[in-house]
Length: 318
Image (cartoon, rainbow, N blue to C red; front, side):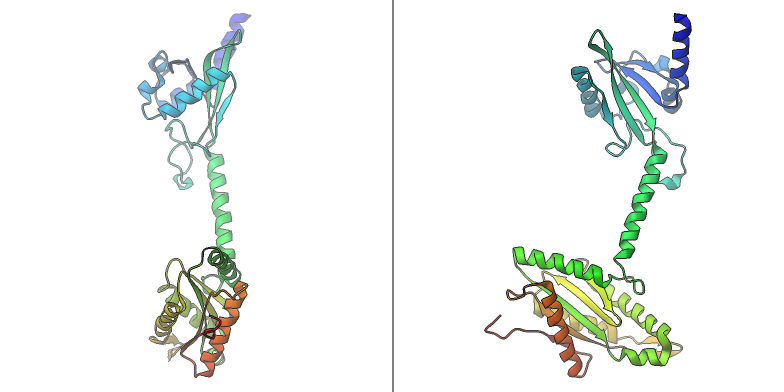
């Protein structure tokens, strides 16, 4: 009867769908099941009785030794998730290469084997969780992509107003705490209604996309460029004094105006008017910058459009 039970136990160990191997305190291999043999290419006869690092020098020696020693000392289970350490052994996996993982992703369990309350060996199990890891990564990527889309304007692909205002609040809070400089620009495409009336909303949308692409190509990586609504755009310029912001405004104004947009075989000249404002001690909220930049933009339009105007406080209040 005992022989039969032992035979069944051996059969289970050989056929089970996860890796099992046993280590002594000196990291010598005491057992090596079929899963480990099939995925490593090494038989039990080749591995058992030798230190695990003999055939697998690429294993994380310090980490694995500490893990096993901890089980010997405490007599409790230990675990390692693929999220903490993607794999222990560099085993090939059977998933499509599009999954984005190089090796089988593994969960590991370290189980104390006891004899009369003494740990005599540690049994390590290796579970193939490649499919789970791929699904989770794809889910996280999908969520990140959705979040990215939620922050973008659907027509132009630049930041939408909600995201721009969130970045403005963050930068305003940073400026309040640490000081320095911070500016923003608001700008409108001039006579945009005329373009819509002449070429339809499809033509107007083309102009908006082209202008957004042109401006996005010249702003700094640390700046936030967004569509505020309609033909109005905004640019947040961290660590930038107002005079420098107005130089940026003139640069962008030239980029917009220097090349007409082709619509239905017609070259359409496009210009923009700019208003700029910067953070100052009397500004109690980020909305103050928006209102001041908007007031400067209104003055730019009153001055004939295709120009840049800065909002400046009276000298006594600056």
